Image (cartoon, rainbow, N blue to C red; front, side, top):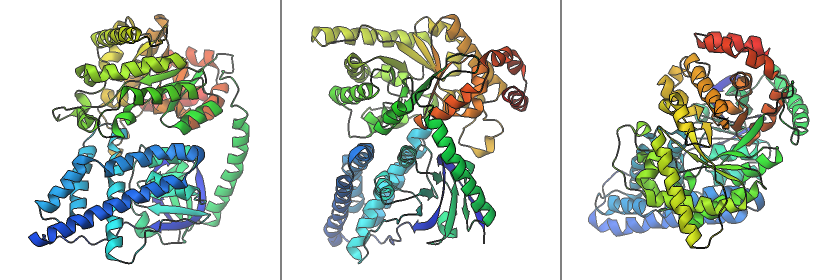
Length: 576
């Protein structure tokens, strides 16, 4: 019988295949307290499971080769570091030795404690890191189970299958992709998880948050995974299959057509050039950006360098990552965003911060960097050194007022003087920009432009702050929309202010890569977009269908709209 499961898009595409279910571990946690004489044996039991999990990750690492290995090894390393994290291990040992917890109960207790920390974070990208905790603990619990039963940990997929699981670790996904996996459906997870990032890089359609998937599906059920429409259809009808075949034909033809645009200029119908930049997080993103003709990297996040290891990354570790990015883009400009963490994640990055009730409105971004000038200077030195290998711009997050940019410029000046004394080559110029994601920065942008060489609008956070609405809250869909008139007026103000100051303005939020908003952004005067590399060709194609002069001529009508429904009507009329 046909059934439709709803989920959330994590990676674009459609796939038709048989379900391969991976149920969560059925390991029964023994909650009885340990007797004193059992503690030593239970600790040995726990640490043997940890060693088995470490060995499993090492073996997975050894099975991967080439570009896929470079892509996935970062995620494997992050999981390996968690298994070696002194604080987590100490917490587990204390639960067994002092709390008299058995190994399985201690693992689940520690998982819940760490997960609560990540769940409290405002940033969806950082919040999704709780999945790493879940996946690592699940791997250890599986190893624990194998010590007490004859069960083998088997995670496999045959050609033509769609994996259905509660969650999947990036290393496992990479291994399965090499075996012919067609797509992934998970009952939990986030579009910002490491697994979702990898799925996009591998071109695997993925749906997350399909809550009933494991209870409704059985092995070998036929599934039509339609990530484009946020659903998976179990036992699809002949009509569903016909729609899938039509999509396949259309996707193949569209893919061939779009591939021809990889080296084409991005130009409107009336001859106005538009710059398309890539948001890059992994080596595969950089390679895809080059292959699809990006004009550069518009946003390179640096947080992973601080979160993937114990303690703070050294200057050389950061320098190597930034240098590889610059070299990978082959002379095209790259924009490196300085550390964008809040107090809720500072401890994990090796920075000691007092806990905050509302980290989203607390010490984060540039506020955190300026509170730790020595740590910030290490990052600045690494960026300056990497900038000798190609054009680099520096983007400062969470800027609210001009004195923050002035302070950052001072630190760059001091770092430059230090490096000169050390006879290290330096770039002649390093543009410094402000990320516009705080309403105060958008309103007072002209003051910021006196100290910034360029601006980058972060619409994801800006929209949340302006509308007081969490974009992940389905109940607020009627409020959180990029078509809200208040948000449009702020965007127009920032873009026009940058144009008057003759300084570049880009946009690096989700709407930058969504073709449904391309006409609106061009109408507001934007001519520099930054997006995931997989979206470059579609946006380039969309730009070519639009008349820039006509859109700009209707900007006033858009800005006079009084509801988001009215804006939508006007856009439908303009973009036709």
